[in-house]
Image 1 (tube, rainbow, N blue to C red):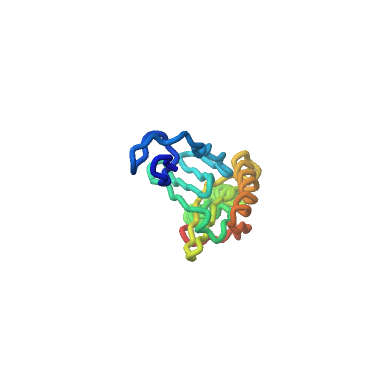
Image 2 (image 1 turned 60 degrees about the vertical axis):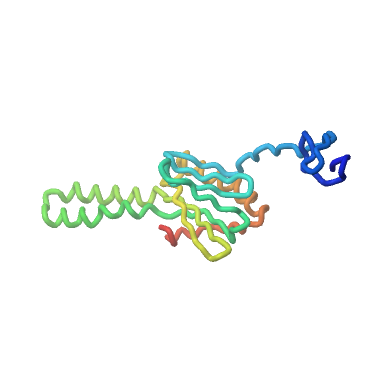
Amino acid sequence: MCTGCGRPQPARSGPCVACGALLPDAPRPAASAPEVPFLSLEWGGRGLRGEDRRLTYRADAATPPVIVELGNLRDVALGRRLFVEALAVVPLAVVLAILVPSLRPVTMGLGGLALLVALLWRRYFLVVRGLNGEHMRWPLGTARVGSGKARHIDEAWTAAAPVLAARGVAVREGTGAPGPGA
């Protein structure tokens, strides 16, 4: 408040904008320190970060990030599913075994390895649903069950889920089924 003309002023130093009188020293709002991220997953250019009241997802280093305000979200879920893409090798192995019978042991081994990979690896993704009904599915990566990367994703989600819930976003368990944006 200016002592000369009595008009309200923003908290700053210098003269009054209306009458030019020197403004008194007033307490200024402290600059808020940036909040510590409640969710941070980054590897290979891909990253998911939750800080303040928003989630930021970057698919790779070349694309701009997708920023979603928590107030615009209905719910968020971490999804996991089998790495079924590895099974694409099985039909090729069957055809090769039929066409070249001498390669049957190799093709059986290749098919078995593909099945093993499909069972032991998981694809992780975050499903984000907005209040307007929009669905986004953000791939987080592929990790072997029990690996350090899988534990890191699970631990980050376990820590972030209560924070998201406290900020008004429903947290649900992922179904594992592919959804929109796959």
